[in-house]
Image (cartoon, rainbow, N blue to C red):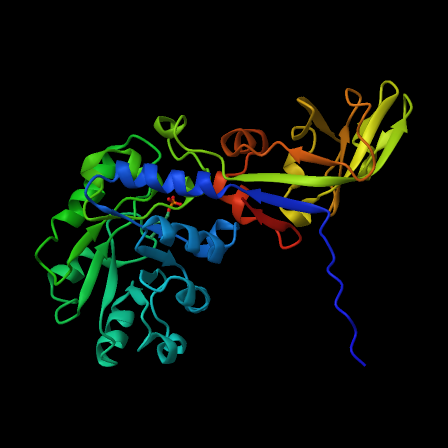
Length: 351
Ligand SMILES: *Cc1c(COP(=O)(O)O)cnc(C)c1O
């Protein structure tokens, strides 16, 4: 007997603004001058949904995408037919069966990965050079001594450790990469992430690799007026209740009412990435009112004060204050964490 599938709607959703996403990419592309402007899609497009992001950016003209792992690459290759895809973590032995013969390129990070790729006759690749961050990449000295000889390199890249700050190390890292121009087979050099693009023309080189700014993150204050918010979080009221003076609210009663109050209990909690650091500092929005979070955020639920909104009822939707720079300041989380932590329970609704 076949059981009919009933579509169950979610009581919380992320509204995603496709125009803002594409607008942010176009702005970063313009700021990249004559360099190509790519897009980092790792971690499921920073939590937004990598496929949906890829389709829109490929349509806008983006031709260089970046993911972290081969599983991410496998999921995206079918939707970005004409574009290049680079896998930032390179190739483990376990990746080779898929990677060799894949249209995606590994970004080789270690002498071991270089050896593995060369011995397999892997073909086109990218290479990460470490210029001071000491995270991933082969050393400048290894490149100078011929480690990369014979590889078919598309992009030679490095990653800036502090592009969101004005420090001499930014220029030193860039120069360490550009000093390698002509010393390998690389067709292109690339240094700039979102913040790096904002550092100025001299960081664009041949290819830029923005991530967070595509998704509404403001990587440096210069970009504040130009980057548009892409994500809006909305959730349904599960219960409306009145508390009396002296009542406590939520786990451990960290909030105790000093007067009678109207509360709404929301379908949203730390399992949805709305972490406990929003307790007492986050807010929701309805009818132009800011409605403060009351007491502790719990796993699936959050209380807000709705004294100012007599017309909010069980089942109504409210927006959560989630402007990324502001929410980062309030919560102490980074703009990256605010996006990548969003969970699986949301409906993701694109406009
Ligand atoms: C994630 C990542 C980017 C994108 O960085 P943003 O700060 O999000 O713009 C670029 N390059 C590399 C190597 C990365 O890992």
